[in-house]
Image 1: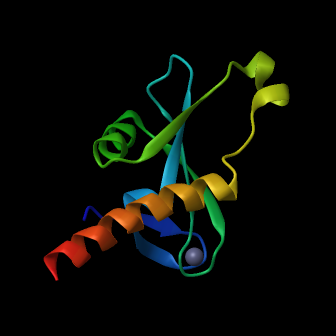
Image 2: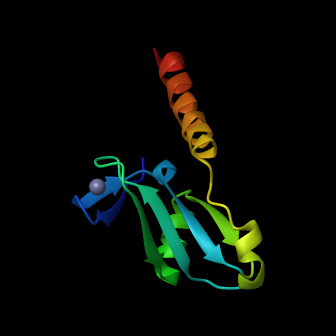
Image 3: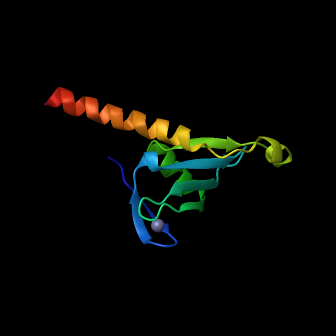
Length: 104
Ligand SMILES: [Zn+2]
């Protein structure tokens, strides 16, 4: 599985899998930010993502959201809920498990 190396302010260098993080892209921009919850200290981190980073993360299967224009942001910009993240992570786990079961 693809691992994504990044840095947690508290823990230093850490490794994530694509399901651990998501991208927030600006409308009509090629750059944005990525958000992840550190698996070691549970702190939510937000980091700037250059065009190169965005490209790499998208190619790795990281999900993304496009932020609405700034003028609408105060009304509509809601972070992804924890339930959505868990649902997404759960789907990944289920796929892995079914593979294991079939192999065994
Ligand atoms: Zn951490």
